[in-house]
Image: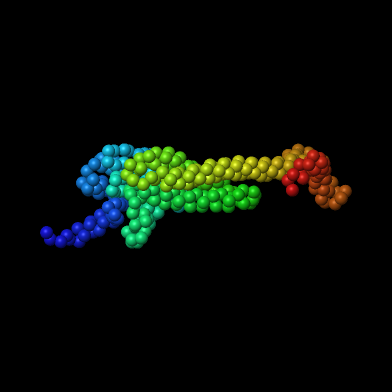
Length: 332
């Protein structure tokens, strides 16, 4: 058979990138990143018991977390968060085929923790023996535990952002409405992931046990505890952000009311001057007007002094009245 041409080598390299395998003590872990349906069909020739519908589920981005049980293996769909610059967090799907002596992970290359775990198993013999030296069930535990720990780190970043917002909520010079809205979206995304993860991990504990002679209940119970801590922290973060949202709304409303009240007082004080100027702007005879002859008792500006005095006296009286009511004190 002649060696493949240039494009043949490129196709083979791309296929190698999409599918990689590492083995230890009879356990084979196959990791597939951004696979095409043809890649999964080829995987089906290696494992004939895999159902075609599960291949479609592995490529679909609208699946909900679930566990499909078969006679010799189980198929698992899990969701984990991935940081995104525009949306904060997005869903990343992990599909897993697990049997007695193998485990196949399928994802779109967005879950770095699982990529790093696979690379460590491939490069370090001690790590490979530690992670893959027991059973496929224990390997599944290590994968989920690693991803849950990463989820906890992402949550700590969100909590840190909440602490930063706390210092800005009471600063009248800065608007934090957008930051609060973004935090609410991030927390909502994480809660949707964790709520499904709690249920799936709980069900998975029973199914994984049949592929391991060792009792894996303590290990998966530890993962459940971590998930519960993440969920409780998310609930607390949600309540905190809701409090900040309400506080920001109250403070913004109070600030707006102060501005409107101040503008209203200024407008009210200008009403006498507006009324007097309106009268003297009419084309009618008025005392001190051009038609009746200007007043000259205090010089050529006598009429102007009269208009200012007539405008200032009511404004001054209103100012004193507002001050006694305490309205001006509230807007200093």
